[in-house]
Length: 468
Image (cartoon, rainbow, N blue to C red; front, side):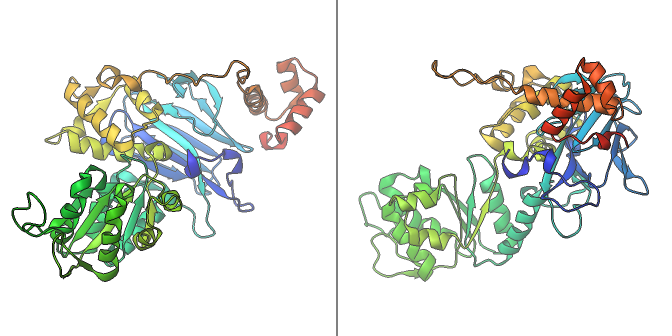
C-alpha cells in the first residue's frame, strides 16, 4: 500500500540504532462501535502487547515502556484475549485462551507471525501493525481519534499524512497561494478544498466547478462570463464562475480536462488577477483564490502538449497529494465514522454496529473508487440495516466476491505461492515456542540441527532473540 505500507523487517525496535521505520499498532475499526473511530499506539521499545476487555478504551504502558496493555469495551472480548510479542524482527500474536478466538485475515489462529498488511481481529476489534517513517525528533505520540478535534478533512492517524495536512493548513491561511490537489477520483479532494477555503478566512463564497462536465462550446462563457449578445442565446450579461467567486475560492475540479483554448484565459486570471468576459473589450479585476484538483498526470500531459506548462507552474503554488483509501486503511475507522455520521440521520450513527463478517469484508476490500464508494456503500447499508446492525447482506455484492485472478499466458507458468514465507513463519513460531532451542526445533520438524541453522542463516533469523 505505497509509502505507508512497509515491511516490518525494517522497523525500529528499542533504543538501538535508528532505522527508516518505526512500528505503530493501529486500531483500524471496532465493529461493535464504529463511531468510536480508530487509535494508534507507538510500539518503539515495546516487547509485549496485551489486548483485552475494559470499561473504556485505554492503553497503559509499564514503567519501563516494555509492555503495553490495550483495553477496549465489548462483549466479544475476553478479559485477557490475545498477546503480541516482539521476537527478533517479528511480531507474534498468541490467543490467550479467549472465548471467541483470535483471527488473522479472517482465519482463526492460536499462534501466528504477523506479516505486513495482515489484519488482526480480537473480539471484533481490528488491528494492524505498520511501519511509518521514523524521524530524528520525538517518537510518534499515542493518539485516540475519538478525541480528535481536527476538521473532518484533516483527520488522520497516519503521521506522514498528518504532517502534510498540517502544512496544508498553514498554506490555507496564506490565502493568496494557489493550491493543486492530486489524487485518485473519490479520494476527497473537494472536501479538502472546502476546508482550505474555510481555513483561509476569505469572506467570499466557495464556488466548485467540474471542468470535465463543462460543455466544450460553453466553457469560456461559463468560466469567465459573457456580455449580452456575445453569442446566440446570450440574452443577458453573466458574470461567470470566476467573478462569482469574488473574495472567495474557485475550486476547479478535474483541471486536466480543461480545453487548451481556455487554459490561456485562466492563465491570465492567475497572472494578472483580471478576467475578460466573452464579448467584452475591457478586463475586470478579480480577487479570487484558485484551488485546482486532478487525478490526471499534468506533467505528462504538459510534455505531450495537452496542458500548458506555464499554467501548471502557476497552479503549483503548493501541491498536496491525497492517497487512495487502500493506501490509508489504518484510517478506515476514522473515515467510516465520519461517513456514518453523514448518512445516518438523527444521531443514529452512534447506535450503528457491524457484524464480524461485515467488518471483515469492509477492511478486506480494496475500495477502488475510494471514499466516494465507501459513502455509497454505507448509505445503502444503513437504509437496509435491521435494529441498527449492518450485516454482510446489507453490503454491495462486490465487497463479498473475491476479484478474479488475472489471466496468465499459457506459455508462462503460473507463479507458485512463496513457500519461503511459510517455512520462515514455521521456524519463527517453533523458536518462540521452544525459547530458541534449535535442537528442539529440529526435532519438531524432523530435520537435522544443521539444516535448521542453514535455514536461519538464509532467513537472517537470530536464535538468541528467542532465548530472552
